Amino acid sequence: MAPILEVEPDSLPPSLDSLGLPEKEKPLLPAEMLEVDNHPRMPRIAILIDDLGYNRHGMESSLILPKEVALAILPGTPFASKTALGAQEQGRVTLLHAPMENQRELKLGPGGLYANMTKQELQATLNQDIDGLPGIQGVNNHMGSLLTTKQQAMDWVMETLTGRSLFFIDSLTSPQSVARQAAENHGLRTASRDVFLDNIRSEKAIDRQFARLIKLARRHGSALAIGHPYPETTAYLKKRLQQLKGDGVQLVPLLDVLLPPKTQHINH
Image (tube, rainbow, N blue to C red; front, side, top):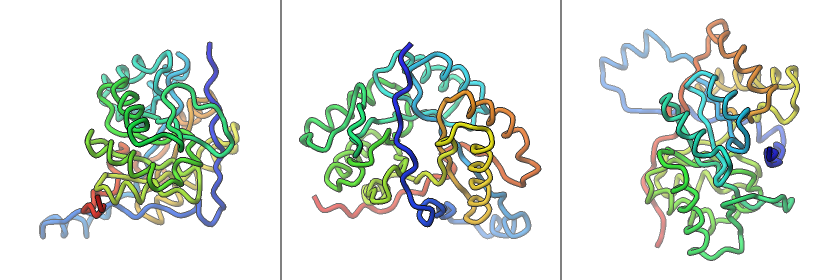
């Protein structure tokens, strides 16, 4: 059984990592305004489990989590297609977990995107990755602490996603990432990761990160966490997500915390 590829640790300083996402806004009709005034929206959290596709256990343990939990799947992996199909049959949001070059020169596995690629090479590879996972709704970066800092490469990525009508999640593995801004510039629905749940694989550490997630959701209206299909993470979430009513927080599908598309202002 192949191991799950190593992922980059949370590299953001606390001052940046604690920033939350602004609550998604939408125009309201007058009657809806009154309803919102009387019934304020409950803080929302979204959870994305990525690094899926390498083994059956990760697939099975993730598919028993609440259907609001989204799954991101590595391309060209043994259980990629089966994981995507199982998730989509549940009505679950699925993403391509696109491998992107990192500063530590860790191996990316199949379908990797590199800073030295030409536009044609990068977009052809990304399109191949997307084609290998029919039915996905979005993309997020696997590793990527180098590539997500490259403006031109990110523009090429977002140009591809625009043509495929996909959203983009910045896993935020570098504080210098320009990925989310590039997505916004290209008119994509987008968001950035607020919290990594399981850089430390213990129940106590995961619980501490989950508490941060709730705190950020209360402060900003919504917050997004990324975790991995570790036994410690899936066991924790299976239990903890049943207790959210007591926290006054709502678990929602990933689509509900995306920022709406902005008007494109790319100079071609």
